Length: 324
Image 1 (cartoon, helix red, strand yellow):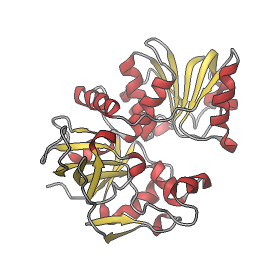
Image 2 (tube, helix red, strand yellow):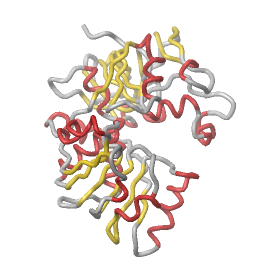
Image 3 (cartoon, helix red, strand yellow):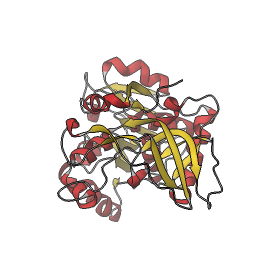
Image 4 (cartoon, one colour):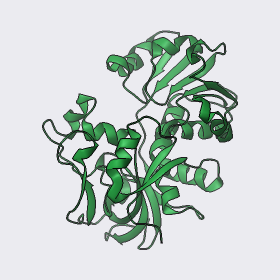
């Protein structure tokens, strides 16, 4: 099979598309013939091993897993003898997590440990592929903060994969959403459901006069210190990033000990129940992944370069098999 492979850490150019062995299928595995995948901010960090701490899990000198990619959509090609939930021919999408491997023509995942579901009717593979990474990070954060109907939530970075999903999922819950984005994205974010929009190129969003139950930094470019004044007395600050000097995990341990504003550093939940919930939201139209650009697998290096410009809006999709 063809796959986008990297055998060392570095810039986008370390990735190359080559022929590799097909994955083996064990008794409880589902083999997916991948039609579409994505390149996201996480892929970029893992490819370059930035921050350096990634090397503790991926390999100190060189990466142990050479094929990256966590989101996929495709067809079930084969199943192990112990598989019960999927059958050959099913159209599926999902999130491979730390197994990675989605930047390839075939991907084998254990049925009982994977976030995978059948694709809702009416969606193409390219439309379904970005439906699990940003959304499950966003939903894990929303659940960690215990957001309730009627609460005020500010989303910083509302046009990224996580932020654009968060705006939609928060509105589905009945929260009042303030979204922070650039000038040329104001109408887009309003269309996602935001009640208020702040143009960060025109004003400092941390000086906003409103107070919020939750502030979600969906791009990891701010800090608890800067956003603290935006929170109500018992408000929660969420971030998808380690933060300056990797402070967010530590603050998540310390701040709940007091009675004031708190930091939560949500660990994304990866389980079949989460995937079933996301499928239901997509199928009902309550959430649709936002797609910026599409690239063929042969141009995946260009996809990496574009994601690293920081200008992407929503998701960048890679077509592993061109649509028929």
